[in-house]
Image (cartoon, rainbow, N blue to C red):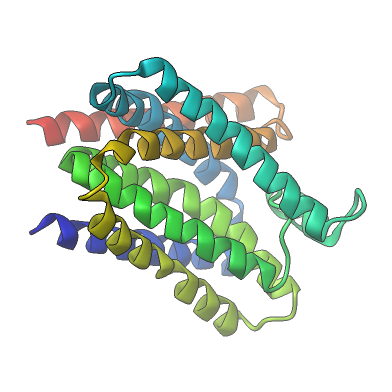
Length: 259
């Protein structure tokens, strides 16, 4: 397949699999108790993709490692500010509806509710598509690993988003439909990234650095705090094992695709 075909396929697969996976967990009472395990695995996949593949690849492509590191730092601060803006816009007091729902359901929060969740998700999915395009245009293996990491972190986020839509009064079918429509923004981002990045190759290291920043921020700021709510030794050991399993999955994929 051509690079563009891989980008489109990965974007579609990432969006559809994350939404369907989230729907299974959000709508199946038995599956909901495994959300914590899935979050732990997603953290490992995210951090593994960042430190084993994305950042090393970005360093290879740049002549200024200090500037690249600065881009990662800028990205982390940027995502912090963006999340704060969303919180200020929708939660004007400590116990806002979106916070309480997600704390009760999943142990972490994103501070979004109603239709605003679709606006945020659509933009996020579009950026994911651009990131996937940049990764595939750099290296096929990097593209695969990046797509896997995006799917891994999108599922637990989509579970929370799905719950908010249901809480906001949408039917299960409507919530699923809206999430699927939003997921296809990643295809638009992937195609646009492919068409524009050919003429802006110098942007790829910075985009990879921003991708790394977003994954680090999601793992450390959104997902890990929720794990601390289960502080028992057994839970801690399980979380650590699943995080290492997520990292190992990325490592194994890198080895297999390098052969």
